[in-house]
Amino acid sequence: MWAILSGIEGNYTAYMAVLQDINSQNIKVEQLYILGDVVGATPETEKLVHRLRNPLSGELSPQISRGWWEEQCLILHGLGGMSEPVELQNLYDSDTIKQLWEVVSRDTVQWIRGLNFGFVELDSLLIHGSSVSVSEELTPNTPPWQLLDRLQRLGVNQLFCGRSGEVFEYQLQFGSITSTVTKLDCQSNSETINTDQKRIIGVGNVGRIPHQGTYTLYNPSNNYLTFRTVRY
Image (cartoon, rainbow, N blue to C red):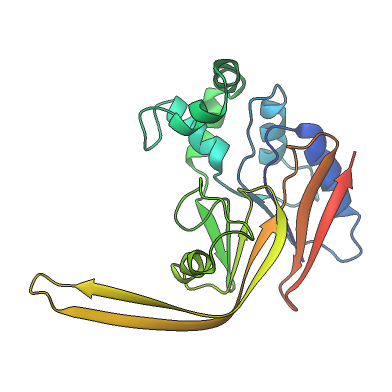
């Protein structure tokens, strides 16, 4: 059994409530994945990061990928792919940006730099946004061709994502993508890829909504999903 989380956003209390729920499951959870947005502009961020980096004896060591908040944090510190945190500035005021700068230590920034972009396990991609960007939100309203493209980029049958914060299961029964390459001599080569039985899973959000966290349990042996809501 896998437990898959995203969007803790520095909410230590929410994470501990979800961790307790994970530990209470009848079937043993063998893998704990956290798909980004661990940090946030909250006073508990450093306490949370310390807990994640130092699990107690007998606890699972979480596998953590980089999320949107981590990406914005790196840009703030001049370590990202952009010179200015434009997306952060468009969504949040200067006080929030200042707090993010202050609550995330330099040691945590270096830890963030070492996080994976995502994980490919069995036939699944586990990632914060999509195979294109940590910023891309995949939802049930995303066009099917776009969802199929994001799956095909890494040749997986399932994509677990957390950027939207939603909990959902979206199934693609059948689809195809045709790609065309036009050469300088105007000759074109086309390739069509047909596929079926794909799905995209939104794993929820642990820390954004006060007193309520959502996450996903997944059994890779039978592909069974359980969406959990924890109130604390």
